[in-house]
Amino acid sequence: MYFLINNVKERYIMYLKLFNKDYVDRSPVTGISIPSDINYLRRVFHFNMNNIKTYYESRNFSIKNTFILSRIIEHFPPMFAYDSYRYVEYIRDKAKYLGKHFQFTNEIEDGVIHPGYFFGKDNEEIIFSLDEYFNPNEAERNWKTISCITIYKHNRNDLKLLLPLSKDDGSRNGLCVIGVNLPLLALKYRAFIREQMSNSEGISLNKNHFIMKYVLNLTCDGIVDHVMLNKLMDLFYNREEVTPKFKHPFKLFFPDVQVNRYLSNTLDVITNKNIDFINIMHNIQLINCIDASELLILPDMPLTRQVLWSMVISRLDYMIFLYDVSKSKNINRHFINDWKVLIKRLIRDNVIEGRFSYETEKDIKEKMYIISSY
Image 1 (spheres, helix red, strand yellow):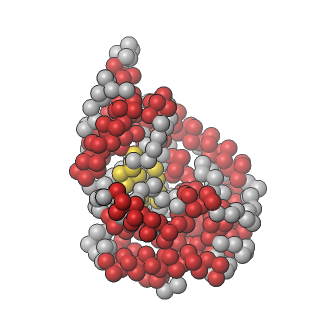
Image 2 (cartoon, helix red, strand yellow):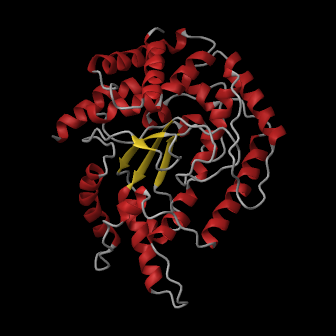
Image 3 (cartoon, one colour):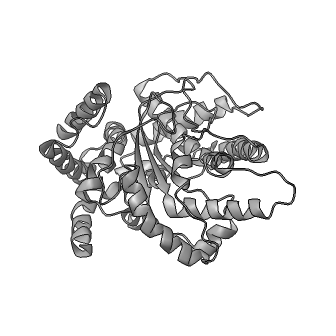
């Protein structure tokens, strides 16, 4: 079984190599221009994100008991007699069944398209069950600040940095892709329970406070980078910003002038330089991730049939954008041909039918047709 999975991984990973960490890391970096405003924007947005994290961690807000993560952690016994390494191994075995029960997507489960558990009911979400490596001792020491949620795609294009609390906040909606590292989530929750047991102040917090303070509160790092990339794509395609109807109950700084100048300069660079797709992504500098090549890395899991469809669909928008902004299609022909192979496979296997709402399925098929015609 292990051999077959690895064989499939090697066979298909090359077709998505543009979003594979190993391939990106060993590819030559050339023609990089650093926008003059990026360091200022990083300081401002880190200030905003620190304010967001401090505010929600210092207050005892909670999410609903029906929230997907709240339902999951009910299945995590703390097992205090286990050290962190043994506990993580125990949870890894348990996570396989939890991922299947909650219909998450991984290398052995197709999963389903979920309602907007994170970004609101007008969205559709692919949720990956992740098992990426982390150091259990280090994670346990830093459980309050280490994130177990990875945002692979969302559609927001505003700078308000609202947390994904399953609220219909008026942000732009669409298909979102999220990854949940279940073993890391369990380890964080165990550390939280241990802290509550030793709390002498008499204030007892529950699992819903934990999800709000130490899980969802940490997602703004990934949200802001996707916002910046979404805004760049919107500038190129001349799409309007969608402003949500809510905001944080405290002041944030919105460097609109610097953001617009950064977007304009970046778009000018990537549309006029004769560079390949990887170096186009390297030229899109971001806030937390170094650039778009780091942001768009796919989950580190075997590309089996069960997971291939979701990974390809999660990168359709970026494939089309890279093709459209590229000055020279010829130097990127090997990437384009790889994508066409994957798209034809998905069309042949008919894996899209019936998974999504009518509008989302129609949109995905249109994008697949565009790529197959390159």
